[in-house]
Amino acid sequence: LLRDLEERNLAYEDLEKRFRQLRGELDDMLSRKDDIGKNIHELERVKRILETTVEEQKQQIIELEDELQAAEDGRLRAEVNMGALKQQMDKNVQDINEQIEDRMRLLQKQLRDNELELEEEK
Image 1 (tube, rainbow, N blue to C red):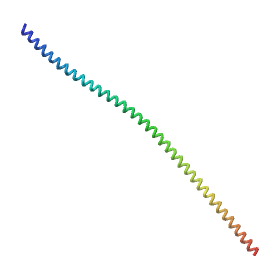
Image 2 (image 1 turned 30 degrees about the vertical axis):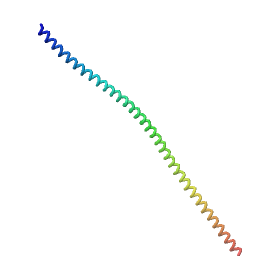
Image 3 (image 1 turned 90 degrees about the vertical axis):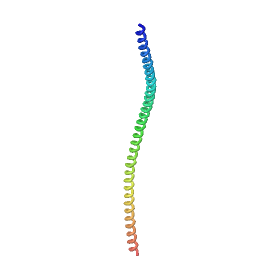
């Protein structure tokens, strides 16, 4: 009985030793899990911040694209207006040149008539 008791005590001590060893490993794993959990929490927080930043930048890109489109539309309108103004100026210049030519013809005719009248009077 004593030998059996001694063997059981040795087995119990081995089991107790193994239990303490496993308990230490479990505690280590739990502490690592907490570190990992903290890291996961930190990563999730950073992820949310980055997602917010991405959304803000997407919104800013949309706004900039709208501004660019408005500027492009304005440029096209300015080009159309400039082309219309150029045509109007060309037409005005042509009209003025025709008026000048008509006036010159009229003045030349008056000059010839006056010269003829002067010749007749002489």
